Image (cartoon, rainbow, N blue to C red; front, side):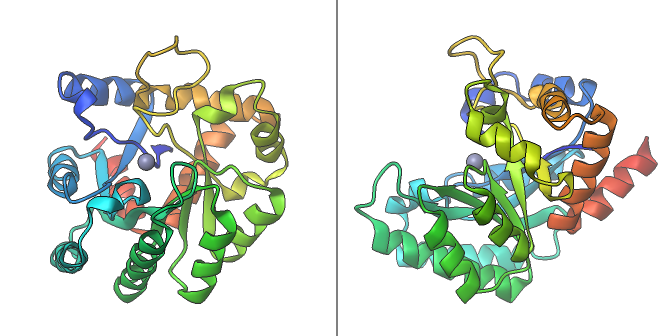
Length: 269
Ligand SMILES: [Zn+2]
């Protein structure tokens, strides 16, 4: 099953054509789209989107790039919101959360606090996490060892094979998307080649990380997932059917609530 495990379909750049983009993605074989939140500004948007679109589900969390706006009472509000939504069949994870040292390290203490609190929340709620990790893999791994959560996905993974193995040992799948489609992305492509397919999930991260075939500035959409899957199939020398079947299973393993959602979609078709 073709599952986009990371897509910001609630982003305002899709305001004009969201339904059309969703329809196009389904036409292109995508069966399910995971829409993570980034801050309190879009908690309701991702909940509403998932509630109204049978093929979308959602995650709740504060993204590290947006945490400068987060006050301590916002964290309390997030916890209350997750608690109120915990039985929502489409709340599949806490996310996206993590650490980002690429943009700035000035707020690192605040980042660590928010990340730790959200890991504790995931553990208390027994929800997996969707991780954003940039230039901060070792610190993220340190916190994951300290606050064990029920696994999840390291989105847009860009680390070493050894770091990948550590995430795998902690119960995580690794997200691959547009970055892998560039022939000059030697490191990511080498990693995609050697990592067993059992550990990989697919994502577009739309509207960000456009794949190589989109012209400069063109917005990325979830419809690109099929072609991203075919790039992975080519890199690994396996069939696209195998990639779609296995990565779909992997996504449901990483985000267990996806499994019943996807089963009901199968029945409905
Ligand atoms: Zn994201």
